[in-house]
Length: 140
Length: 438
Image (cartoon, rainbow over all chains, first blue to last red; front, side, top):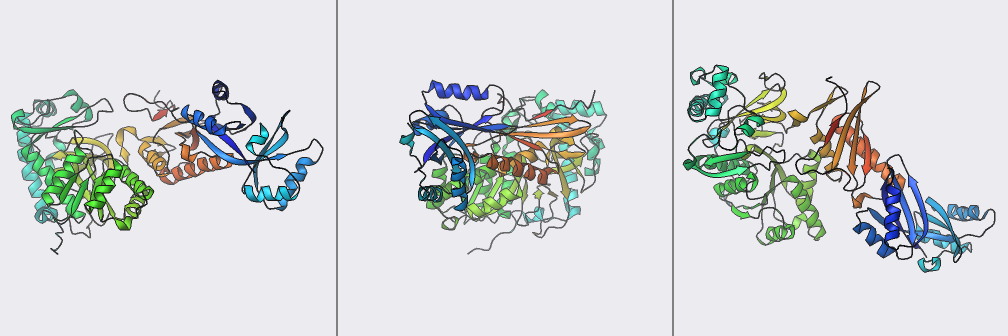
């Protein structure tokens, strides 16, 4: 129960992010979620889209450095404390969270994306706590 | 089993210092006369300096002779430094000319003989005999690598495989099918072959390689150990330059502590690159070679721009030939940063060792009266990670590796592929923004 996330290396320079997003648009890649981590020198653009295989190939073809990672998408309810509850479950299961970001779609609902050190362990712990994790197709 | 020949030409390789000096002096006197007569370009330089062939009575008079530099080679291109009639020459070799200064060197039959001898000495020092199978994976062509080792290998009597470079899987196949025991190529190609062998699922134990002769580019001690492990052999360094002859000007023995110079053919000096003054043995400075026997392209006091140290310390291999340390860099691209001598080649060596691309840019600046060193390097797809932590760690560990090599902590910047400008000629690797000479 995981989804494919594509990470793209972007230099931290004016216009580089615009270039990359224009490239994504021009290749008809439909983004569901996106986050950016940045340092002084570079940023990592992380995206979740409908056809990760095609998107990754297109980006690589366009000269981008990319990597595909399996991440967890956990359904989250629109109530206070729901994120804290998920993180507590993961913490109790001794799962390390590298990073997380949220997205909401009218069709699929709200999800938190988690990049963790052990997907299987994390998914099992969440399932045990009654928290649903999504597959790629669930999000589209 | 025939006993292993330790030296190819023992009378030269183990000569006493007195014998060697006498031989060098005798050759130098003759060579200076010959060059003065045949090479107008050098005759003019000697005349300008007020030196005549009669002033040169032994190698102690060497310092009186004018230097030749890269610029002279460019000015005299192509025939200005030719030492004999073209009809006596049988081959040329040429440098890549990436700096816009192509060198064309001419070889007579004797020149090729002595070059082959030099390479044969190198191979013998690496344990080669006529029972060996020597795979030459240096490029064959204008580049000296392939032909040089090929000639040496045949002199020793090895079964010679003139593979040239490239087509790595075929290289490995020959290595297996014909049981190559010696491989000659650039160290980076050797490292690549090591990787390929691993990818093909072959263990180094399944190969018969025992020795490798690697040169023509800078490489580190770490790289040596990696190659030795991945190919299951002992790795020997070899040094040369087209201007003198090609590989085999100097070679390593089993001690692996510097390279013995074939000083009966190539007389070596170390000079101060600023003043041209000859420095005593053990000093760090620019390496200068005088070809004592070359006929086609007889360069006297040619400044190699390689910075290194010479040593006559007794070697356990029994050779008395003077040793040169691995060159630390080129005199013309040395930077002084916070009082420390830094060569771009040192930084490049670290980048390659750490698995980065050779596309990099070094920027030196002065901020608040303190020098700064910034190194930008292109990230490779294999090194990319989706977490900032991993990439920041990579930057830190690279900065640390550079610090260990040059003694200065740089700021490392990972940049996207193909963002460091390529140029038609040699790429600009260093930008010094300090205004030190205004």
